[in-house]
Amino acid sequence: RDGGRELMFYYGRRNGMAAHAVLRDCVLQIDEEVAKLLELKAKLGGDDGKHQFVLKTAKGTRDYNPKQMAIREKVFNTVVACFKRHGAETIDTPVFELKETLTGKYGEDSKLIYDLKDQGGELLSLRYDLTVPFARYLAMNKITNIKRYHIAKVYRRDNPSMTRGRYREFYQCDFDIAGQYDAMIPDAECLKIVHEILSELELGDFRIKVNDRRILDGMFAACGVPDDKFRTICSTVDKLDKMSWEDVKNEMVNEKGLSEQAADLIGEFVSMQGGRDLAERLLQNPRLSQNKLACSGLSDVKLLFSYLELFQVTDKVVFDLSLARGLDYYTGLIYEAVLTQAGLSGDTLNGAEDSVSVGSVAGGGRYDGLVGMFDPKGRKVPCVGVSFGIERIFTIMEQKAESSADKVRTTEVQVLVASAQKNLLEERLKLVTDLWKAGIKAEVMYKKNPKLLSQLQHCEESGIPLVAILGEQELKDGVVKLRVVATREEVDFSRADLIREIRRRTSEA
Picture 1: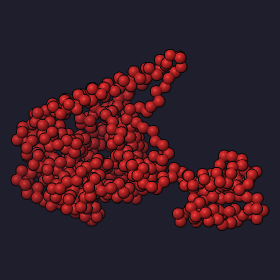
Picture 2: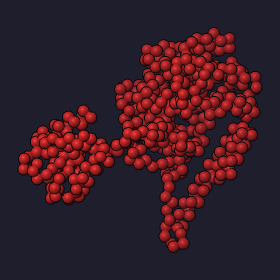
Picture 3: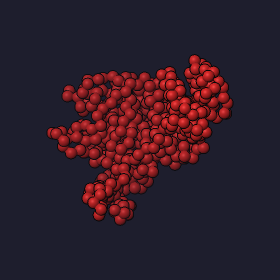
Picture 4: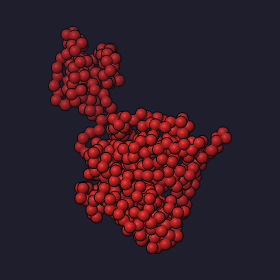
């Protein structure tokens, strides 16, 4: 298996990406066969006759501990709050679809779809993304207008890279606007949402690259790419964020049969970056100005930047002709958000200087023809949307939490009901019941007579801010001693005032 990976690297470098892809598929097959052998070994058991389990998660998947789940929940809350702020409603779809629903929608990535065994007359596959199921949902229910978000797991038979946040099972967070509207207004709002979420999560510097499939197709035509090679050349250009231009050119010329002259012309265009000014210059370009499709895309990019200026997000958006996004269903504007290691100023974005990319965390675009592929009468519903690569965001947030001195709370308990003496279990249970009824997040320790010091230590370790302490004297006086864990301040309150005081203190915190 390790030798296969070395061969994949060696021959990929020597013979181009086609050989690399074949060897990658071989390594994937070897990994799956090894997994089957391990499973068979576990079933056969050891020499003592006992069943031996292989204690591991499946390849490309992982478990999440409470600390990691607390970070995930924080991210989800931020994302969902933004989606709702922009007026979206949510839906859900099955985790698997008919195989024919997914087939032919993802270009060269279709080989990464997980197919399921026939379990009753239907050929099924696990969903590859949330966009194609959304288009099927719209066509099936004859919906022509909706602004929706969907957060769910998707599955890809990819070669995973766990350290970079790439898995075989992972969450996507999608926001989409379906309906017939004036050009670029919904598209600009999608980019505004990307800007808001990435800014609020404080992941670091980022930029949002935008392009248009019509500009790409017009560029390919102007450079002499045959019509039947548009999609495959587009898939190769899409690899520019992972490969050098020399390797991309080699794949286009030696593996996909493109002329070297056409590849060189493409190379001139895909090196261009800028903003609204670049769109204006390209509209005057002798090659592109003769192509109606390219001119239509460039005019829309100009219009887009005028709306982005009103949304105050142009500081992070760059018009980048190298952006391709290989999915077949995109028809217009496409975009991708990338985290960068170096700071990005406006001058950097519009100049030749480039920052080092540390990975895409969101992407999307316009797909006006996808719903019509499912509609019996071919009725189209224009759509535009964005999908967040939430696993990569989780990975970054986890790394930040590890390096931070701040402790991640894994529960939301506001107060611990404690006792200062023995034989007060019944009183503790009565008080915690009253707090639960009032909607306060509270807990007690599961011992009849816990030591007060143990109860206070539990609060410090768990980050619980308040302790409601019951003692014999407090019961006689009809009060509860409320202790602030951080300052050790203690104040007596009547049972009637206790709930109001806990609410006040926790709301201030």
